[in-house]
Image (cartoon, rainbow, N blue to C red; front, top):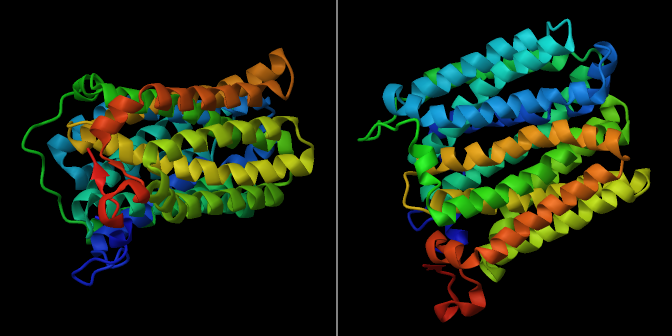
Length: 411
């Protein structure tokens, strides 16, 4: 199937013509991803309001993603027993409760704890939402991935903007706003999404770990681990380096999120068609490494430009990594996704904690040097493990190498 088919099918359907259940799930996914970047513009305000250091405030990301990573082992176990719809609703309910509680925090310790509960809810929702969208979307799994990446990009773009608008009045308001939006998502899922068919076999807690025994999936997860370290160094540490007002910081990360969305949904598929998935992924990781190092050593305007530009490379990487994770092995998609996310979210937990510590131990440039090296390690893994990934992943062949000029999936 050509990538254009994802947008226009022979039957006359399009990517935008989806059942209400898909749109309800995708809409709630947008809000879920908004919660990741929501705190970006208000990190300095939180530090000031709670009299905390940057490293203490960065624990908001660490607790969130650490719990998210561990919870990935539980999501399949839960959803295969109570069903996708109930799992989504349980995750949304937890996010509503803990996001609201985060807004009431009286200390950074309380806020970090509430963000951990938020991470549990987000893990249940995000991992299950991809499976639900894949199962219910018109146009097949590739179209569903584009819908999911669209939700991710839109959420990443709008999160900092919402955080800036509400956070300008008080750092507490973005948390209350997220709780309200997720409550709306809860109602939409309740009304529009019917219970999805349960898998014939129940997922055990160890299935995602066993799935990582597949060389291709393990390689994709390992590369994504190092990539996510670079990604979340930009997301969690850069706001302290830019040191801007919530509005200005929100505008920077809004532009960053727009590039992320555009490149993940529109640019990445075209690059994959022309050059092949693994070549695109390796090149994008190298460019991200260069970008974050320049960010760390450049002046203030250069740092702003490089922050925004990193969204383009991150968007491409997100799309290719997601496709690899879902297609590289013969494990069921929810199980493969859980194993992959279990590995990569640990880096998202580590980077926000380590980046400020590295600055304390050295200087403000070194966290970005480490992030750049991490991205290069991710690219090296893709290169070294290319044979395993290409053989199993169904990599999209470059147009010039495909028969009759039609892109095919080469096994």
